[in-house]
Length: 170
Image 1 (cartoon, helix red, strand yellow):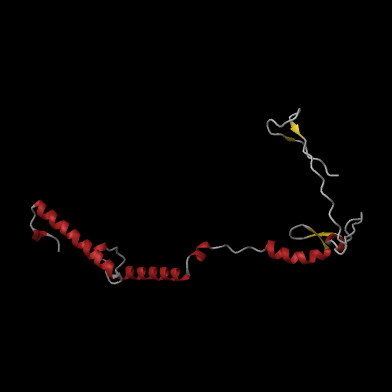
Image 2 (cartoon, rainbow, N blue to C red):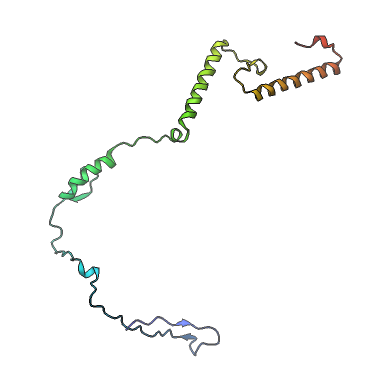
């Protein structure tokens, strides 16, 4: 027979004298037995363990101090040395994140900038004096436009102050 579950509290108005309704469940019929089938548990032989314990002596690993049977220890030592004793390579996330072409382009640009500095005498140039050779067309036009605006403001300031325009820088 099955164990009976504890009583469940009843809804309002349906409770008996104690306020609890017993949870009684009908028993399930037994499962029919099938003669031709053999379960997996009965098909596999069960190992018998004697009170003596394992028959092989346990030996500690010289690297991690875990104990193994002699036959397992021979396999474990090689794995233990490989996995736990070798130094791992330091992972360089930047190397994997940045494409090789981008690194090459950056190095080439840095080399070119160094060569330009050497050719110019190492002095820093003002933005107006920078050569426009390596710039894209749109940037050349933008720089020329900015220069024109600066010069126009300078002319307006000279006119406002009453200075002669002949004294403007060239």
